Image 1 (cartoon, helix red, strand yellow):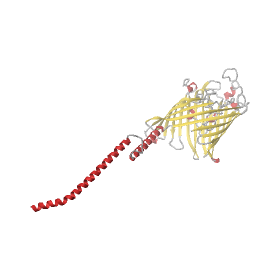
Image 2: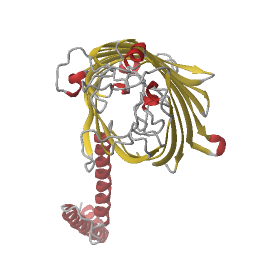
Image 3: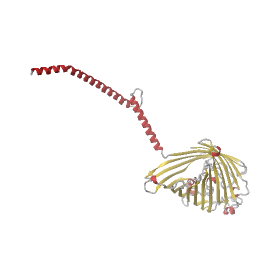
Image 4: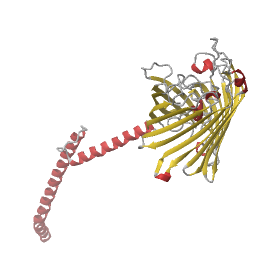
Length: 470
C-alpha cells in the first residue's frame, strides 16, 4: 500500500514541471488575446468617432475613409436617379428666328422699294400631366415673343411673305410676348382591358388654347415657316389661314377641344380620325360668345411608296362666324387636302388643295405644290433646297363685287378694280446648316397677278432668314 502511494507521488512530481509550462503558455496566449481585443475596441471607437462627421480626412482610419467614399457615391447616384425621375417626360424647345426682306419697286402701297427686319422667339415646354390608371396626361405650354411686322405689300391674297413676323399689339419700340398655347391632353389606350402595353389604338382628348394647325392640315415639308417656306400660302391651306376661315385670334390661336382616334396596328400604315371645335370671331380671343364655332374634321393615313413614308390628309370645315370680303360675318364651309410623300431618300414632294363650298370669299380655290431636296448629292446632307408653286382662283362673287364693294363705309371702293383670274406665287429657298443649332436660309418669292388684279405688276421679295434653336 505504501509502495503504491509512493509511486503516485513520484509520478505527480515528475509531471509538475510539464504542467507548469502549459499554464504559463496559456496565460501568455490569454494576455495576447486581451491586448488584441483592446486594440480592436480602440480602432472601433476611432471609426465610430470618424463616422460621426461626413467629412473625409486623411487622419481617419482607412476603412472609415472607404466607407464614406462608398456612401457619398451611393448618395450621389440616388440624387441623380431622383433628378432623372423628376425630369422624365419633360421636354423643352426653344428658338429665335430673324428675317430680313426687301420688296421690289411697285410691290408696296407707295410703289417704293422697301426693306424690313423682324424676329420671333418661341419657347415650349411639355410636362407630364399625371395618370389615371392606364390613362396618361400631358401639359403643353408655348410662349411666343417678337418684334417687327415685316414688309407691307400692296393688296394681295396672301399678303404675308413673312409668316414669322410677330408684332401685333405692340409698338415698334416694344418686344411683345403672349402665352400662345396652353393645353392639356389625355391619352386613353384602347381596348379598355387594363393592359396598356398591348394597346395599338388610342383616344387623344385635348383642350385648352390651341393652334388648330398643330392638329389639322399638317405637312412634313410645308408647315413650319421658321425652317421652310415663309409665304403664308405655303405654310397652311390659304383658304383657312389667309382667307380667315380658321377663325383664330390675331396671333393664330383659339380656345378649343379636339378628340382624336389613332390606330397603329399596322406599322407604316397608321391612320387617325380627328374632330376639333374652336372659338371663332370674338370667341377666339375670349372677348365674346363661343357660339357658332369653327368645326373641323380630318381623316389621316400614312402609307409607303417603294418603302418610303408619306402622309395623306382629307378634311372639311365649317365656321359659323367667318369674315367675308364685304365685312359681313357669315357661315363659311370648305374642304381640303394635304399630302406629303418621299419619292427618294433625299426628295420629298408636297401638295395642298382647298375648295370653298360656302361663303363670300375673295378666292374659292387654292392649289399649292412643291418639293424639298436634301443636300446629300453635294455632301451637305443636312441642307435643303425647296421650291413651291401656288395658284388661287378669284371667286365669282368677288369678281362681280370687287370694283364697287365698300365694306368700311367711307364712300370709296375698298379694292377699286375688277378682279379676275388666278393669283400665282413662287418661292425658292436654300437652307444652309451652319451647325446643329444654327442655320441660314436665303429666300426668293414672286407674286403674280396679286389679289387677282391684272392691272398691277408682279411683286418680288428677297430675304434672308437666320434661326438658332434647340
